[in-house]
Image 1: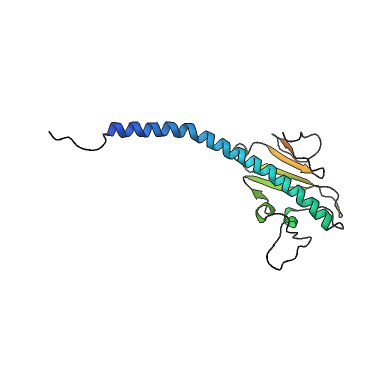
Image 2 (image 1 turned 180 degrees about the vertical axis):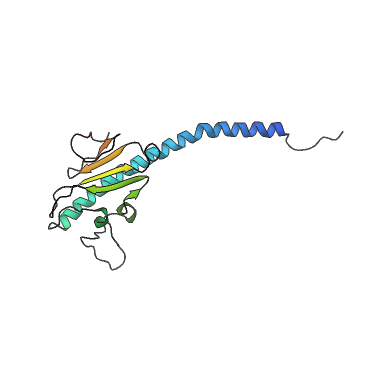
Length: 160
């Protein structure tokens, strides 16, 4: 009787089972690392908006702080000149309001000239794109909470 070359069906099934076991161990760790990366990017985005707000306030003192993310962004190519409606201080993705699984908003700016603001970063899908909410205001302290944030004030603990 002649012996066939190659792998038997049992050998292939064992290899597939081993690969599936390794994948079952690796996928949750990958998802967790992506969630942590999204949270880090959200905190960095809040920090970027803080810096942009300070620059905006310095550049346009008659307006105060920007009342929308779009005012901090804008078309910043070639001969375009920064204005109060598009100051070219943050990238277009962040100015659009959603970046790295988080939704960014500016609120509580008050009347012109605005002397305060809140920037809030909320996960687009809680427990998938992020767990924590981030915020900051004119004091530039980044605060974090596991529950939804509507107003950023001293009752919310600083990020650790």
